[in-house]
Image (cartoon, rainbow, N blue to C red; front, side, top):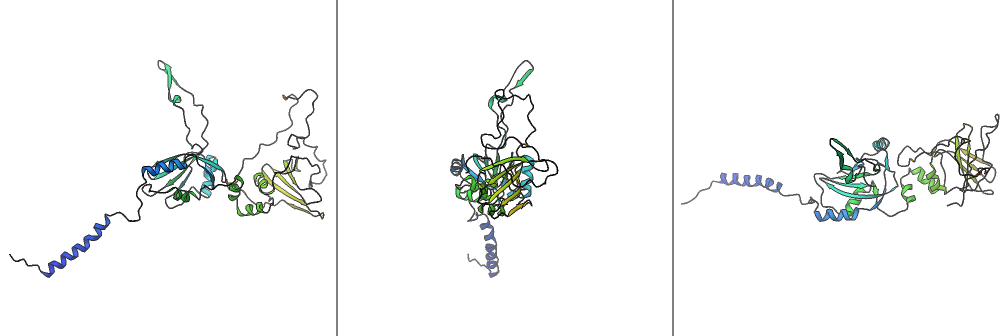
Length: 346
């Protein structure tokens, strides 16, 4: 039997075929979309990253949250929010500090790196055992140390794709540094530009802390301790000896409050205006404990009867506070007159 097909029917069939093609292609995966990470890659990344030491580029807050690298590369928390997190929860590691990756876990669309043991308190098996007689039971006391670590989490969109170790390191580069360097190099890289330039020029700025001054000028050959006109305990680091320039760097607590330079030609340069502000927890350090008053007469001691307290400790630091200046004298204490050796410079 002879079949007839009209031109109109053929045109409609061709249009239907063209309309169906996009739906067929939509079912195929994108050619540039990476497959999910394999079990072998997980084992390899875990083996290569576990127990690895890295340098931090940002301060890490203590606890369970830590720092998260979002799928688009943003860091959460960061900037002022990171400062608030560190202030609220404590600091697990400051910027420029060497930390250890103690565990690697894959959770859904995340890779979680445990830093310095993590922020979760770990208990022993026997601390979950209860013993007792009758209705009276007791659990083993929790005597373990408090956690001091944190976490670094890398989030991905939907799932963790197949990825190499170098790609993971590049993704973590804004937060941690895998390169080999000294502690001093890692610390200096975290400082503000003005502080880095001063350290390169071996200069002390008002507002620096002791660690920064040590990086800039080395350990002080001489140090003294005294009280200023406001009755504040201070420590003065002295660099140089005549006939060279002599520089006096004065600390109250851990902060430089005065820099005085005595030139060879007799000129005197004094700086007391703050030149750098360290509000970032990346460069914040713990304040030393204030010096308490004189020891009571009946305080216990290991000294023999009649043995006097020396004027300096084994490091050459002055231990006895000299008599305060008589009233009516100048409020500017001027350069210290007593030079006390503190051992060889670094």
